[in-house]
Amino acid sequence: MASSVPPLRPAIDRTAPKPSPVREPLWRHVLGDCLRDLRHERGEKLSETARRAGVSPQYLSEMERGRKEPSSEMIAAVAGALDVTLVDLTLAVAESLRSAQNSTSRGATCSAAYALAA
Image (cartoon, rainbow, N blue to C red):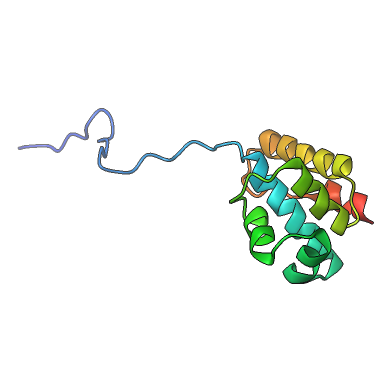
């Protein structure tokens, strides 16, 4: 009489993809999120904010999506168009990065920027 004996340890599926480690978001991505959040909070279109900042809507869109590494002059121009100082925007981005690091969540919010913009 043969009996079925379970293995001592579960079989390992070596073909299953390994989960990727949680990465800290890049500064330019969090900056873009903050800029977009501020613009939406004001109820503005991309073209309106871009015009006041003196940049093209395409460039502002790339900034908001984290595709560009904008100069401090460009960041200051967009911040000014959103009625936020460069210092306040930088602090909001830093706080969002700190929150993302502490919670290890990917969707960092820009709540500090909301408070500064009010």
